[in-house]
Length: 373
Image 1 (tube, rainbow, N blue to C red):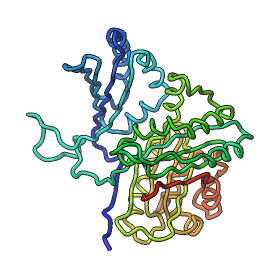
Image 2: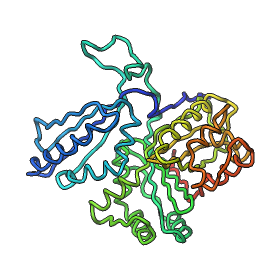
Image 3: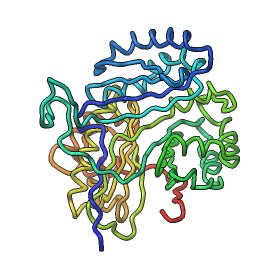
């Protein structure tokens, strides 16, 4: 039997981040775009963690532009790009841009007269490359009107799965959908181009029919026939993956997928996600842990942890919640908005640990894997 290598993808490795934004402009919109970019550039320059940016225009096709930016690390960029401030800042660009594509890369090596010959973690360089599994992960989250939860769950569980094969290089691998009260979380796994897969799914008649059917129940209005309305909705609904780890051992039989919801205290979402990410890194190295793999998603003060584990979560509540080790429960208590999830008081007690597990465990609506995955 071939034992798989450990997979670890993380926004918390401390390395500097390079963000690349490819843009295709409408003809005649260049000057309007430059004016919008100047406004954005001045605003982003004051964002904590931002180091520099460049605006480039193709020498082969003047409609194609490139914006690159450098950040101290991934967390401050993610906090900025997922903020309401960012949504408002980029609005003036929407009428200029036909299409965009965003890519984010950790900086591993840098060449220059002042650069060290060996990787320097203190300078934001990774010592070793991370190992992935060829899969991109992303999630969307939104809320529905209280009282409509059962109807929305019914609609979301009844749709017909779209064709998994997007193109020669891209394939939908798995879609997992959960609810916590009136909050919906849809997580997707894609082999290949994530953006191409999301666009492919959005175009499918069966998916569009379900999205239209749930529109009346959404707390945030949207019109998917209006590009601007759709863009704003999906920007605000984005729940990026900040950590994914898989243990370097054969996948045990009977793995079950669960989602746990951790509402953070105001401004503590990234810190809470970092805590859970570190706990899951440790679990991946522990052959006795019931958690085989996990993905942590975070946006603002919303943190969702998707885990594939053996057995029921309540067989080992501490490991299932990511609280193994001295002081971890107290640290989570400091960051978690316990009142929002109905668990107040010390997390050092068995009773409150069990209550937290019960209250954080999300309702599974559907979990579909593509054939051959």
